[in-house]
Length: 130
Ligand code: SF4
Image (cartoon, rainbow, N blue to C red; front, side, top):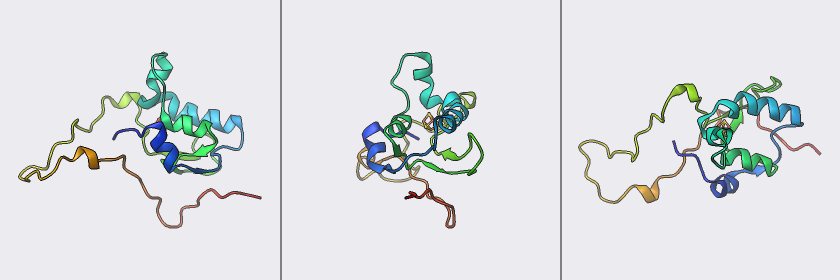
């Protein structure tokens, strides 16, 4: 699954901040981003890092983060793009092959976009507090 660019992630993000203080943010990012392949280049010092983290630093809420365990430090959100470095390479073939036995009528690349995951009904959503 291809990580969205910063512009794509900003466009789908919503108002609000994911963490109420720096400790919450540091614990979550240590638990997720600190061992995620999408931020590995930044940790090695040779890449820009994950666009979703940059969106969060802009005080926006990435749409790719869904509620996980509210009240559990470091586990409040689940990132749909998280993939541990221990999981090995990207399991998705590149380019994505056409289904076998199907005719190709149009190139698929212009129509492919990052997937969105919907939260189940009844999942508590963060709300702005006055
Ligand atoms: S994909 Fe998610 S878990 Fe991985 S670095 Fe980006 S925000 Fe963190």
